[in-house]
Image 1 (cartoon, helix red, strand yellow):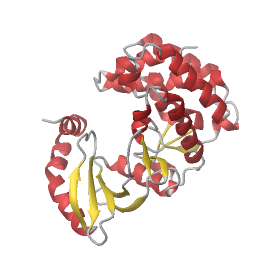
Image 2 (cartoon, rainbow, N blue to C red):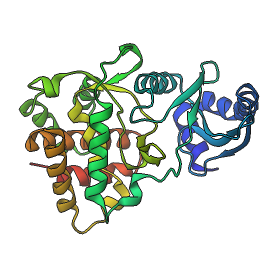
Image 3 (cartoon, one colour):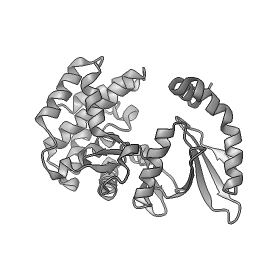
Length: 295
């Protein structure tokens, strides 16, 4: 069984099994509805079905994405509608019943991870530019999005394996509150703006796969800071890489450096908590990043 099927069955159980069984029929129906051809699934599927395709009418390349969970579909659809292609992949159409999105196909479609580690400063500048472009919207429909406040409440309520890191994160939340408008303003965040979710297109670098999270802009930096995690933790100069990123983000986003470092640490601890709950080995790697971000 491939990792995609394992993920779906682990996360959704019987309903996930039923969704997987229906995938071929959904693909056929959506292909007919949107008049697509040459449907070819991505090879590295993880939590949703994604495939390259072309329109029959003019051969335009597109991406078909079918999302396993209703809430994830709603949040991504609403976020992409608000972005309207500014800094993010274009949403052409959506099918509510099948939880499907018809998306722009980014060409050449290389991810920002290809720049790591040799061109990490360049990658950081690109990410900062996208954060400034994306994190400007007040959410139109707050009901469909997760919030940073919910994440922090969960961090406080659920005991982590590494309780010392959890304790320090809660101390940092108290020490570095969202203390002025630059940090308190509740914006629509991408919510998962790491290297693999920033890809090259004919329009420049754009974001894909938004989670849709409501919170302050400083939260958006965290996903980039701790990625690409599997390669990042292997770097002998890990602390220097993180320090350089913090310097660049602080300058480009006009956020005080210690504040930025504290919240990057907090987001790494939250990521470790989530991963540990799912018995994901990434938890230990996120903990390594968090330790390097301690003030």
